[in-house]
Amino acid sequence: MLKRLLRYAEMNLSEIRRARKLSQEQLAEILHVSQGSVAKLEKRTDIYISSMRRFIEEVGG
Image (cartoon, rainbow, N blue to C red; front, side, top):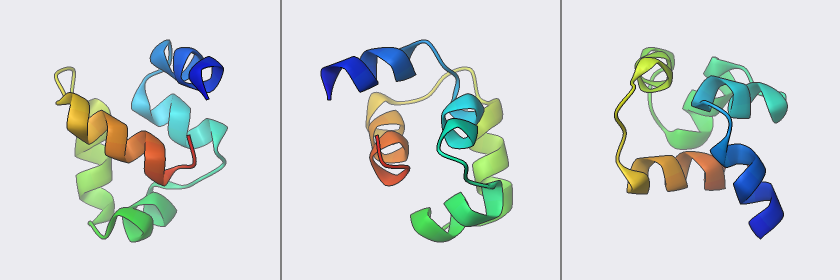
């Protein structure tokens, strides 16, 4: 698990999502948010660690 987390640490959120072969729509459904919210989250340069953790956990990281 640590290896996977370290690999993800070098990727931005959209790269992580694409590596897991998920569309923004699919991820939005998993996270129970809108596709637009996923797009905004991926564009942010500042993100809380808790948000990043939830994102990674939900995409199977």
